[in-house]
Length: 333
Length: 277
View 1: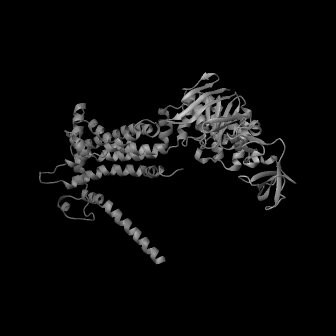
View 2: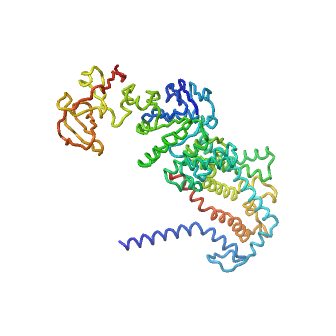
């Protein structure tokens, strides 16, 4: 429900500046994902938006209203923490009702809202349990439920899936996506270091690096038109192949990038080398080919692996799928 | 191999017995003595021979002993309440609020507890006189709170630090003020620590002698340790060992009962800070 604007926002701890001037607008009802390597400032940025930390300079606006010094509970936000952060001594019902009780909401209204949220998340049979009696996935749902009942303008997720095992992570990811569809007017901001989560959940992704915004855009934009070497390397799995030296010079750039699925095995090509390793995933497979570049080049091919390790193969990029970067890591256009 | 194991088991329990006898014997001897009268008192008896309530009757029938017990109960309880209130609020600030000089403040609090009681006695006496609380329970409460707080604050600060920050932040997002965080989120989680430190503060206040002796002048304001210390016999030369021992047993039993009641909490409290989970 809220449009969030960050205007040249910075954050310093003493002499150390961790957020170095970020301009970003998050539209109403948008699912925005902050992604980046650890230490890039993505969690700090989320905490600045939540109000748990104050911004050092710059402006933050919610629906045009300046909220720089507003305390978290007055901003209309709800937050889901990485470690669930449930109150250990309260039952699930009281965990979800705590905020509303402090707001002096009537008991009937509290009960209605908690029960609705519990039904939505399928935890209505757990309301009388203590957090320690729940599994990790159930705890995370309670934490999400506690956020829902607050009826927030903005939902903040701080790496909510990183404590769950792989299977549960995919399932909970799906539930968060469903939640976003069913609450389409609520703005959601989600922090993760996992670019797969970012790609699958986001309407738009903001890639952060070293306290600066590297690029913001839809997942497809970032994937197809990375604005820098860093974004190109960060988005996409497996990582984009980067070639330097003579390979790049031939194309008139410093670094040449090509995604694994845009490489083909051909009869004859200047890029020739031995297959070092094969990873077979069933639906497709990866060839690691040593063609004399800094790292082996990864080639993604559909179906089961047919080329054995040790074979010499020639590979070539599909036309129109090369990314060229200059010495500053910026794209050559 | 099994012979060696048997030996080490025997050795272990022998050591346990030695330690138990070593620590329990003084109290046991007090109990035995409290039930003996007359010249039996001056014979060394390791096992009870006669059994008489006479000493207890003497003590409880004394003019002000029961009054002293109530003084002690009031002073110790009030001390615990004040100390815990101040310590919980102070440790929240020391553990969770970032401010300049926090480490220095913690060190100073610790330093306060290093002074021997006798060193501060004169200054404290002036303070008590200045506040006009000499010969009232408040003189003892004030001095006990001063001496209990360093320990209480340190222990609670350690516990408070171990509580996950996210829980506090979740409460802040839910709209809780620091006071609500302390009373409705942290206090329930800190119960074991509160019980442990509260009990130790209670025991300290209950058994304290020097301040209680100095800050009281009339018999009706005395606490139990002073009352016991000032029990007098029929003549100046006679030390009434029987009644003294009976009184000691009377004042120790409530402590033992308290510790037994809260025993499980104490164990949980002493270990809870050390292990995550």
